Image (cartoon, rainbow, N blue to C red; front, side, top):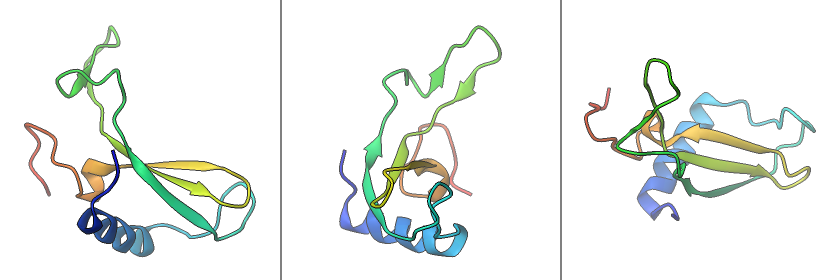
Length: 89
């Protein structure tokens, strides 16, 4: 699902404040922000792996326009997606 203009602004501000802008694969700084990806294994906010249950977060993809490296960031932890049952900190 595409990011709304407000989500994109919050994400870009967070990204600029927290993340080294250089691509870890090629060293360039030329990125494109993709959509929010919701893992299809996401069922009720949890994934059963046969061990203690872990939360799965929708992710925002950021793609290096030089080498096509893809980085994923938790939309919940960035603050642009509210996960049911989780309070924003």
